[in-house]
Amino acid sequence: MKQKKEKKFGKGAIVCRRCGRHEGVIRKYGLYYCRQCWREIAEKMGWKKYS
Image 1 (cartoon, rainbow, N blue to C red):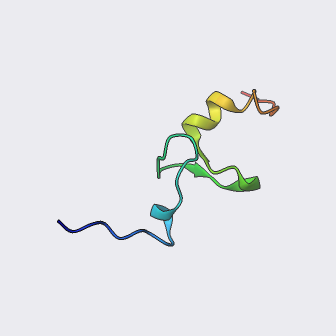
Image 2 (spheres, rainbow, N blue to C red):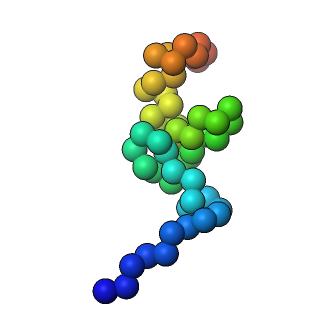
Image 3 (cartoon, rainbow, N blue to C red):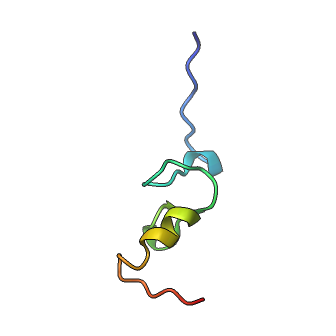
């Protein structure tokens, strides 16, 4: 069986640290969390959320 080649660049190479998702990853400030995980943990990390 053929194994998948590791993605080295592009959107597919960037994954969420928490869940491994490829879509909607926030890279700013070196966060590397997807939008969904970020909303769950932002307050715990000391970020103030504004709605």
